[in-house]
Length: 430
Ligand code: AMP
Ligand code: GLY
Image 1 (cartoon, rainbow, N blue to C red):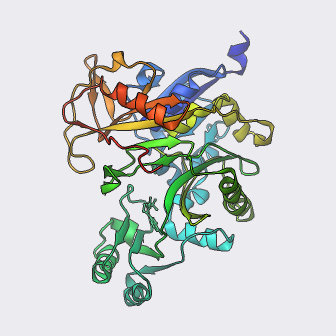
Image 2 (image 1 turned 45 degrees about the vertical axis):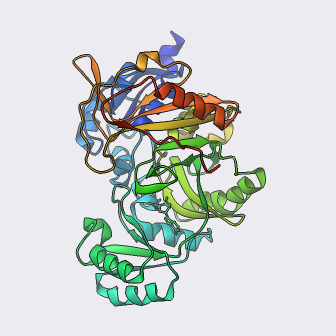
Image 3 (image 1 turned 90 degrees about the vertical axis):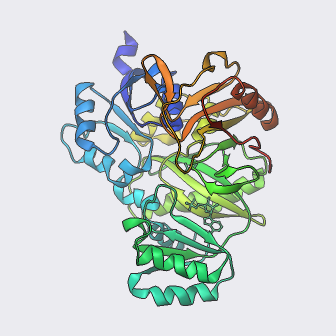
């Protein structure tokens, strides 16, 4: 009976491996009464009720929230946040009591605009690559700036470009041609009407995840993802082909530098700039020598980083979210599993370019000792079939990351779908 009173109806927005992981964690919470995922996937349908609406259709989200008496909305991807879903709730009399986990639109610009993020870092003295930004009216100045830099050249579309907006080029003439294509020929549509050109940072990447209620913050475990499609980090960029947590080279000393030089000034900067933030801050970092520098901010959790970070969080996630909503995150202690977690993404053959969908996935019931988080898969006529490029993330724990990875690979052997591909070298560089 008591559960009835204090527990909540929760809606998760999104449909990937990240959202299945959120659903898996939230479903374990005594504070969760009913769980909904919109639109969800075959994995979330085992734990929650899927609702087939778009994450950017705010009116449909409102209807769902009203129909199911939702008390809390957890926003997975960046699109709804950058489009102002949190503000939409706050500005609606019928919705403003609902807790939304994710920053408001003004703060989501940290991911929505690279230039905004660079200016924020510059204002708050947060270490990052030197940069300048350009638009079509000062293209010639862009060329001149490129000439002052050493290769490789880093060009970034200012706006959201589905993870494709960053180009790294070795040749100056090619960099100039791409800059023109982005600014003048709208290579990434409106997203590249402005371009940030920045200094190339040479080092190894990792990500730091922070949760904040706008006043207080807590740091979640670090993770490293593997973005390229090919082994040895070669070939095209993807959403992420695997991840490891914690990051073995993130020593205590290095983590202290991240907290002092980056996390604290970021959270203080949000307050100083009056950017309302209740949610996850994903800080993409590069270790240059012994120093962390910021590559980018995302205003959400990473995918597949979520699939290794959340399984290591022992604390009840709904308790954490409630504390964020009520701005008392300082009262919550995060308990982290000491074991390592790894995940390996199984993708459709051809991804990240054209690939086929609708392939039946078999063998999931034989997986033992790992957690298969569903990403691009859906239920059809009682069968689980592929519906996206990144299909499934096999997460495992281990006393070491090597042990965890071994388990993920053993279980992947049992799963099968036509033209399945995965990288066999996750963790190779650690
Ligand atoms: P982003 O979309 O900003 O995460 O950039 C995509 C990828 O480009 C990053 O994960 C890095 O591998 C790479 N990258 C971005 N900015 C830089 C930089 N300034 N120096 C070196 N690599 C970079
Ligand atoms: N795995 C990188 C991202 O979620 O942006």
